[in-house]
Structure formats: structure tokens, C-alpha cells
Length: 377
Image (cartoon, rainbow, N blue to C red; front, side):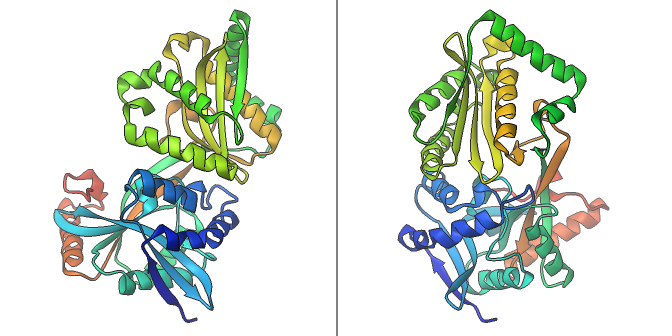
């Protein structure tokens, strides 16, 4: 199979690929090991505008018989790898993503091999390629197959587990399977809050007043424990601006779904999510600390879960870390691993050699990010 390559550097060029780009993601996003909404062009454009200031995005395109076979939207940055300064390239999803992977027409090893060949031959000036894959996903399986051939210099540098819920049962059956004490707490919070005043679960989707939802989330964030901890959206302008831009872009595509719990007419908790295909993505949630004893976050989540089960959603992707409050709802997780692919350059060979020496001196297969000289941005 013969391939031709192009490297696109302007939005006028890559927006022409919106249809084949989005179709490939939709076709490969049906389960928790597939690609997710963070692999879409809509997500990439929002990151490009917000994180990269509408600069420095390049898209490698591999085509065969006028059909797009592979896409790789990437950006460049300096990175120190095992104390060696390197020129890094990475998919734009490395800036912020979920279950990303290789954007191939089909999960076939020859397409991945083609894309990586094009990366070496058509994209100059890089030493390491940094990317993240979900373990056991089609993309990870393809990479493993290529690794077994011995033609790639790949190093795993980090891993993170994220929880998810399988919604393949009736709500009543799923709820009955939760820990007894947790079930009691959920119902007790719900009863306690409703006996203290009016409780309303408001839903914001396409066509809703998105600025009203955003105003409510900002109010809740500023009154949450996250504000003092420095992890709220209102303390991080980059993330706050990204969420604002994504909210409108996702609403235009019919993906946005926001949820606010009002207590006595006051917004007290929220869940900021996306509904993409048959999966719900939980991007951000919080509650006002002053109402903690009434469990507003639990009350909203209880109502939201029942709603999603009724709608036939297949999975609830919690994303992020395996925090305690998430694991009360599920014991299922997936693992995202980040890798380095070394190019055949002097700096890449030096970094790879330094890493091998370090492992030898440590006498174990220590994850390089457990040392002080790890690959850093």
C-alpha cells in the first residue's frame, strides 16, 4: 500500500478534514478502551486556541488513494530526557486529554507503521515523540506489535489509573450493588436536604443559557474547599478559559451536558460533563463547603446517575485520578500510560543511553519519572 504525506500548518487546511477526522473518532469510541471525545478536532482546536495561543499546531496526514488513513495533530516543545536536552513533539492531547490514541482510519498495524515512518521522514527537527495510550486499547496493542519487531526505541515513563462505571444494568440493580453504608448515606443526604427546603436538579444542554451555568459553577467553585486548596477552576485561568471555550464548542456539537443542584433557589453543587456517543464524561464537579453536612454533591450525583441509567448511557467516565469519592461508585479502572519514542538523532541516542545507564546503576526497571532527572517539560 502506497502512502502520501502532508503536514498542515493552518486552520484553513486542517478544518477541511473535519468530516473524516470526526467520523474516525465516532467509529472507534464505543467502549471504554476506545478513543474518546478528547481525540476530536473540536477538542484539538480548543486546546490550540487556549493553550497554544492559536500557534504552533501541525497536523501530519497520511493518505492512500485520496483517503485519509492517519492523522497526527502535534506541537513542539523542549524536554529534558534523562538530563539530556531534547526537542520533543507530542500530540496536542498531551496538553490535556482522556482516553486518547492513534488517529487511524482503522486499527491496523500497517497504518501505525506508516504514520511513524512519516513522522521520521516528513517531520524534521525532533528527538523524542511523547504520547499517551490506554492499556489494552487497540492503539496500545498495535504499538506492542511494532515493539515486538524490534524496530522501535520506546520507553514507558508514567502511568495513571482512572475510574469508570459500566451502566449495563437497570438503575435499581446497580444501586443495590453499591456498599450498603454508602447507599444509606446517599438516601439519608437526599432525605435530609429535601426536608430542609426545595431541591431542584437543573440540566443545561444545547440551547440552554450556558452563561447561567458558568456563573453557577464559578459561584460554587469559589465557595468550595478546592478554592482554598488552589485546585478550583477560579484559581487557574488557563483551565477556566479552556472550560469556557469548550462549553460553547461542545454545545454547538450537541455534546455539552451541565447539571446544577439548587437548594432553596441557590446553586450548591454541579457536574460539568459531556455526552459523546454512549459515554458520559465527568470533567469537573464541586459543591459549596458550607452545605457539606447536607451532602449536596451526593444528592446531585444520585439524581444524575439515575437519569443517565434511564437514558441508556453505557459508561460513566470519571477521568482524572482514582480519588476516594469516585471509587465509592465503582471498582473498575483503566490505565493510561505515557511513552517516549526515540528518534535516530544524536540527542535521542544520548538520552536513551543515559536512561539505560541509569537503570543499570539502579539495578532495577525503575520508572524514569521516579528519579529527579526524568523527562520534564
